[in-house]
Figure (tube, rainbow, N blue to C red):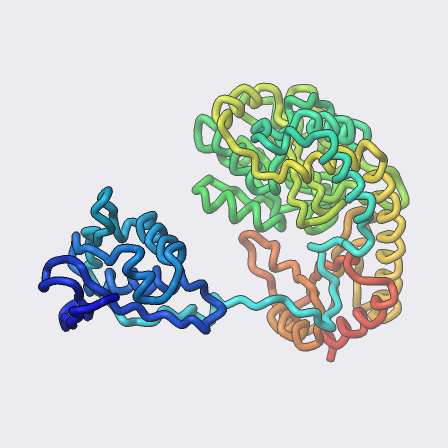
Length: 495
């Protein structure tokens, strides 16, 4: 039974059983037993914590015993114990054996502010809604045709056979068996000559490029295609490298300008130049390789981002397949061929780079999900990958042909199409008086996802007068929607 209770205004506490300062008291705790959304121990913990932070207690002041507080609140001792233990774990209170719980001496905040932190409008996000936009974007693939059931079977196989591997951190370059499978795949499909030890797997091309640049003994100068992959250009610029945009000619990157740039790395997309689509002919490939081998510190980074998709003829062999002097760093990805969200990319390091890479990244924790990598291994080994690529090649060729036919029928002599049968996009030039800014604005109005060439120009500005160039993708639009997408495009460009 509690008695001799009196109130102390400074601490807003009810003291009991003895004179002021004796240390035995009852404290006011605000709890709501009807509040089902928050456990009672959490309410006790929160209330005491707030009183401590607002100086309602003195340092080293004693708290009621667990039994006293439990009796006061008509709760179980376990509930109070849970609250005290949480406060103890976070450092708000401390305990002395056979003496009880005491308020810790806590450093106070030097400045107080009642300002409410509000997220600026430009930083707010919202969940993407399904809309009636039609997409002629180059960036996406058709995920609706992905063989998820087959992928899940491969995942179960991975779980069954590699359960122990999921309990540890894998090799910094990725599991050996997965690298071995990738080496076989790109050897057969792209002519890439390598052993599993040369392959580095990561979650996207950008991390791989950053790792590659970080192992250079001196800051390199890098030549990049212009127009080209703006994300790579931005990445290299952000890490304060000397980046030299090099214009293109009809055969790809201008080799004469590469030589003048004094670059020791050149980043190219020879099998399907991004974004123009140009396939680099053998003569230009040999010129690039000859340029690289003339100096010991010259290398070519070959980004083979969508080489799986080739129409009417066989695939073009990789640039790396022609390299006899270990000067090509080959990069590939499964984002276009499988699912972008899998985030599986890889690079093949020339052997001179391999030792340095392992010295620098011996303690790297891999970025990829290990289960996903083993699932990919079985998906390739079981033939699921090749079957999927064949299906998608047929599907994409039908969409590509339909889109070109619809464009020619609708636009006639107002359009010129750069018809290169490879990849998941092509470029088209339209004789319109609209500016790039107007086209981008109207595309939103007519609910059409398109991208103009000015997104990929790294230095030059687009002229608003004269023909206007678009990058048109066909991977993420069903064939039945192509006529409507073309109609919307006509409205964007000519209405």
